Length: 231
Image (tube, rainbow, N blue to C red; front, top):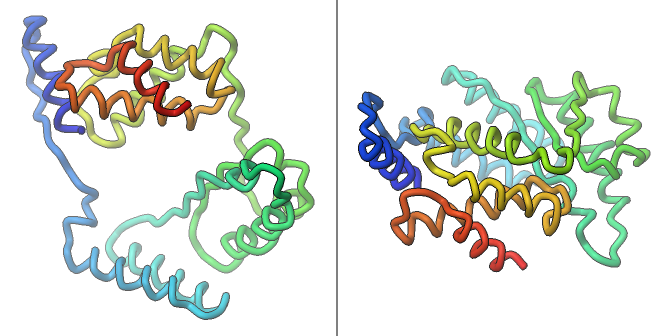
């Protein structure tokens, strides 16, 4: 998909008469290119999954952290979907969520010499487990809701950042039509109910359709098509 996006952006520039000097490339993470390192990571991960006790899990996790550092990498744990416990109808998962904060998060903070980031739903802020563990957080960042009618710009910046992280050598304007971003903004305030995750899922599916249909850019129609698949 990255190759298709970059090819499309490159063709857009040529049609506009803009000289392009960027080199387009597809790159895996640098550590993945080291076959020996990748195998060590895979093996250590399997050892963590087979660990029989919390003590073993912590020990194997420390080994994984040391492995990355030995190869000049800075390990970081990212838990980005902790609110899925709240999305199970008619099932109270608050005991599980409380235990997650008092046990798992506490272990991350006190037993592993490694940074971590956790995306937390607003509803968790009043949970006893979260309140008890909050003192272990070095920084708490509150992500505000976008103001009505002012989400297109921020959504565009998020899309651009995602493209930059994945080394897509193009601007968001070269990949998404303005009307397509407006369509994503509309979804944010309506069907997505303010969920950026839902908006980005639609954006990702729109990109997949653009690549499959050999479109040069993601159009509003492709966003609408993606929306119908998530309803």
